Amino acid sequence: MNHNLDDVDRKILRELQTDGRASFRDISSRIGVSTPTVSARVQAMTDMGLIRGYTTVLDADLLGQVSVVVTVEAKPSEVERVYSRLVGEDMVRQLYVLSDSRLLLMVSYYNPIKYKQFIESLSQIPEIRSVSTSMVLKTPKEIQRAALTDEAGLLIRCYYCGHLIHDEGVKLKIDGKYHYMCCDVCAKLYKEKYDKLKKSA
Ligand SMILES: [Zn+2]
Image 1 (cartoon, rainbow, N blue to C red):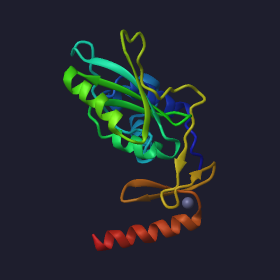
Image 2 (tube, helix red, strand yellow):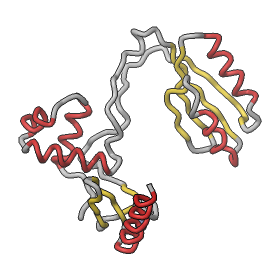
Image 3 (cartoon, rainbow, N blue to C red):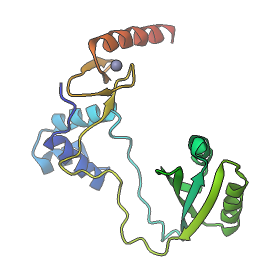
Image 4 (cartoon, rainbow, N blue to C red):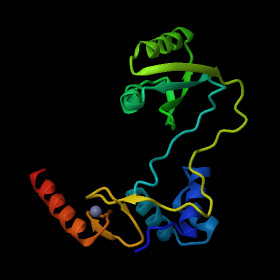
């Protein structure tokens, strides 16, 4: 079994990234493979966690939203604690953990008072060393972070032990869904655990 994406997978993903509402039949006629193939590939990529969902893309400017790039410097040992406090904030639309114990936040808001309160709340967090903000004036380019060039491969983790699965792995179809394990031992243990959980459910 090979986990790498092939051309058909990439073509399907490109179609879906352009139009998440495209039907399997539309995609099949556009890329020249059968509808069941499209359906099976999408199901497999969903099971693997590569396709995370389908969403509606809105124009933030039309909504009158204001965006600010916020850089936070955390104490080196407290990076995780800081970002776990920030992920739940509605105003934080994107959050990147950078090298040098820094975090980059894309913050968007409508209400300037709430924004000011948020920035002030950051300075109250003892694990944060410094905060800097820059307002976004224009967004000449904004696309999905996942680029589908031919180099795009797949990093799948074993459902049982969590290690990255390299070229060979074990694929089990259980209850109509694919489950991925790194080796036979993990596959056996995973199946046992799965059956046990299912029995107790
Ligand atoms: Zn494993």
